[in-house]
Amino acid sequence: MSVSSVSNSPVLDELTIKDKIKDEPKSGELGQKAFLKLMITQMENQDPLSPQENTEFIAQLAQFSSVEALDSMNNKFDNLTENFVANQALQASSLVGRSVAVSSEIAQLDAGDIVAASVDVPASTSSVTVKIYAESGELLDQADLGAQGAGEMVARWNGEKLEVNGTVLEWNSSTEGGHPPGIYRMEFEASIDGEPTQLNAALSANVNSVTVGKDGVLTLNLAGIGPVKMSEVKQFN
Image (cartoon, rainbow, N blue to C red):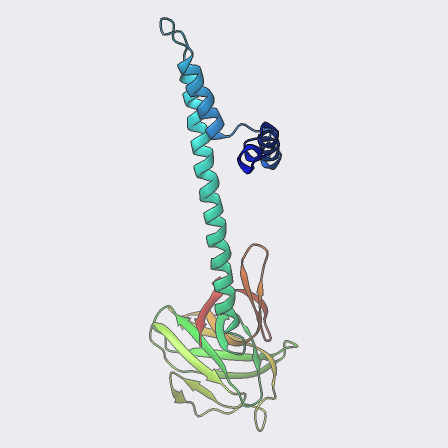
């Protein structure tokens, strides 16, 4: 038997066909290509004098296309979201060890470091006062920061001295040598139109770690304050 006669054997052809059928994935669902082929076959075999209504076929075909397009869009959006979260986490990890400012009255004073406060003064005032409390709630110090114009006032405290808008005040802590490292509460108050008004302040805090939630939300774990969402950070120092 020649090589050509073996290769053209119907038995081998049958085996080849069976193998092809075996390799083809089986599915109980009707794909778009199969549906389109079915519609064309129907149109080719219909009675030209009494054509069938194909509106339903065409509507279903349009649905196939819409579903495929939406599925593709969803996959691309999921990939984009995953990449965005990964990039956010990578950028946020670089904040560990750095200082940020968040809306808070609580701050942690570290040895040899300072607590910075960005205070919003809504209107010009003849007097702004800061009160410093211990973690237990005890009032430790109080200082008059002087007259301030409307806008941002920046105060810095190292446990012993106060600096306001770059000027060191002639004021000293009530504790000789300054207060020790620890957690403190700072309240800022101004006289606006003759009325005492509590001012909003953003205090500095060191970033200890970063957490990425299941929903992709980034949370900064701040020293002395705890978890704070990335979106709540007022300033990166």
